[in-house]
Length: 368
Image (cartoon, rainbow, N blue to C red; front, top):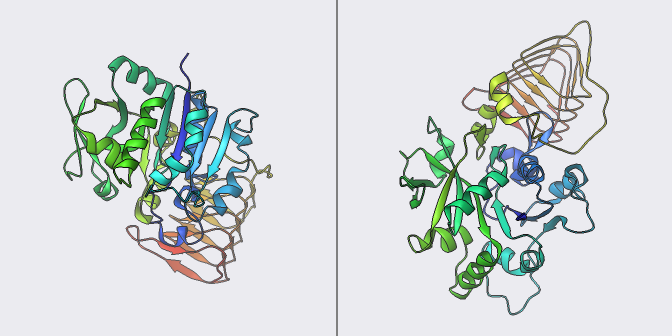
């Protein structure tokens, strides 16, 4: 059976979530009550029996390293293979590579030494639940050089403006990659490629002074290489702005949308905290909300998402808000259309109100 190695490439993912990415890269941003955005990428690989995963990180990755540790929560703490967090190596005086090709060049040993036959490369901003074994099967059947994954979306939300789109013929072969704002075939920033072919493309791109492997090594070689398109039809969220983060967070309050992303047969895994179940006091009233473990709730919570260890005192009101880990909401405080990052405290009687299209965001460890 063919084996797959995984690369999570964070090099070109911009920290565009404003206050939420002041102190962390976007891959480490908390999402869905108990997860980080990178959990979905790693879980997809773990559920696809990928046991060797590299993370190409360039900036603000301390929080990411703290979360991932040695990869044990994804069964990646192994003697052979496992999880590797790989910042760029600046110590090679002969290195002429640029952009994300620095990562590919300076960590080429990960590619050449892996026992895998194929490599999956993905980012973390496309949240999904995908099995790469199915992608590999279709890739081999098509005889393509590269298979890219796309989602045919029903509505082109603002977050798709910066996404690449695909023109696809009747045989699912990609004929063009562009930024047409009216094309519904959204490239999901993930592709699968044979290991030795990937190595050759990396060397050729560096020799020609390229700086972006996908744009120069794959997109820039159309129509000379055969690129196959694999259509992903499951739950999907592209998070590349505060507005998209806020909207997709609340989509999870719809049970059908939640179940499309979180599947029993392919669970999304994360770092385990072993906290007690949440406690609901007699004064509390909670409606249509997602509440993680370790919370103590004495106030009113409606249409909101509470992460682990949140404390809501009696008389406090929270509506349409995302409250991250260990925040404390004092009595008589009112929050509506708000995102609180970790370890914030809202004082007695304080009112914070944002707009549904522009939520109020408070950076971590702030008191108001």
